[in-house]
Image (tube, rainbow, N blue to C red; front, side):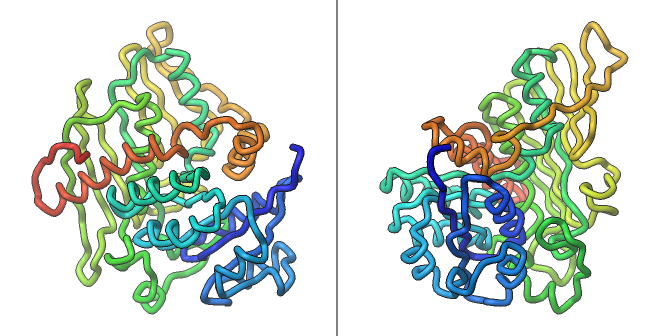
Length: 357
């Protein structure tokens, strides 16, 4: 790379901010020019871990942007505020990497895209699952036509709950008080397992299906007594090739990055000429083909720089003029959001609905 990229991190609602800032800190051609959050205590760990001086830590995001003049801003607000924060940052003419999901609604997603188009800067939606080697390997094999045309995607994912871990998956213990105060459990903020996890499955599923969209969606959610958001959802999408299923769960027995729960977290892909089982963080994937119907275990690809994490990839694209593609592109993420919005409507109406456009 020919330049040093300036990156700022704004709004620490989502614990993934720490993970993304670590990627910036470790990148040889990037620096953290500032971090900002209205609650100073939420930035304390990041400031210490990455050795940020006091003059790079702000409670006013405007000062952070005006003094640091970043090329790229990482945003990690509550899901319900993704459009708001995009609109707040866009006037500073910087590229934006928004941590998943795209938005809490299709309307907000479109507002974000329109807002950024006016600045002629990139809007990138990061899905951490995109950087899991098993799923990258699966996409390569699909593109190589190893299982023919993809006709079904089956997805199950979640964790013990969003309050069981912090940045870099450091374990913590949730309390009733923390749960009551967390935006993850507020409907108005875009909380709930469906909005937190369904976009992973529908966006990567769209990637596996090369951009195909479903015809209709049916969804059921479980909202435990005393909560205003769901902790479990099952979504069926009907395509012209058949049915696909996407299931989200807060409350798995274990966290998949430590011990895979049962059912396993990940994808099972069915094609016209075979199948692939691709589980989160697995060292191998299992593929069935016409030549090997008994199935083969294939080691996952080794992801190399700059295609091993979102920061390296985005900066590579900005440096070379390469187009952001796959799940990180707003175009593909919008299809995932269409399915999410349709699922929300279906669960509310308790009936099958056509795909929202």
